[in-house]
Length: 381
Image (cartoon, rainbow, N blue to C red):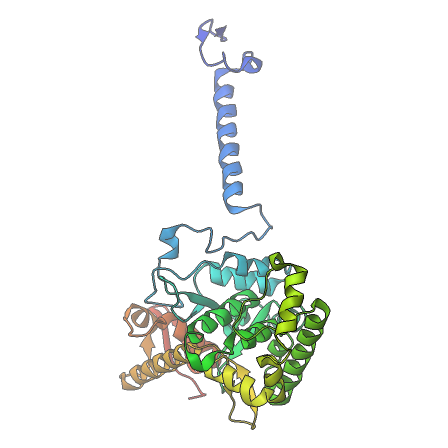
């Protein structure tokens, strides 16, 4: 126990002997500083240091945050999937566009593409629309960063509609995961027994994913190179080419068993047959799996696609038409943005998301007034 200046016992200095000579008021002040510093430290641990851009991924968020509705989807499924590892690819790129994409996904402001239902939960692949990047960053910065992320680092994949009025970006990890989800769906049908071989090749062809328009000659060249590499590897390992859909032999079989198997089975498996007709079989398989979509511009040209991507595009188009008709039926040919956001829609995309997209494309003109924000049809309509 210590004594203060008034000669009274000071009971608060037993645990802090170094401040026994200080005044009582100063002790309280130091205690407040220590408490404030403790809160600051805990907040840094939770949010990350300033300037580190450490954003929380969907895998590390709470179940309550994962089940909340977002701007991109008004009616959400309970589980949009665990994309933690796939989204970590964006953190490896120290550019503003990559950080912006991850921020849009983490804050649930992106567009979601439902994958084929192969598990108990419905998986939704997050995709960032092109206009969202241009809203937050300059167009020159976005074009430079996307060119590096898309064509050089192969970290993102570009998906677009046939008219290219909708352009979205997803990470390469999410895209490959969607390819194998599609394979699991179609591999149950007997007519698609070659989906395993085609998916294995297509998921590793990064050069094809850097093209806006994919020609059939590009696919034939890439497939032939894949077959040559497979044959060369099989000859070196003294084993036949694996059949489509069959699992690769494990290392536990041993080299002797592999040679015996190679002697029994001649090297005339299905990939060798596919090599003679790569365009007619491989492309047909990709189109039936809805991983490629034929274009209307030229013959034998395709764009990258996903099975349910067309459903998302139709919902965007229907929501856009619905908003346009509401504006045309209004008395003053304009409508409040607040009233649009409060309306419930039968689509998986909210009116706020569609309004922002239409304003960015010039379909709607935004007018800011003291009473609120209003929109009317733009000059492009």
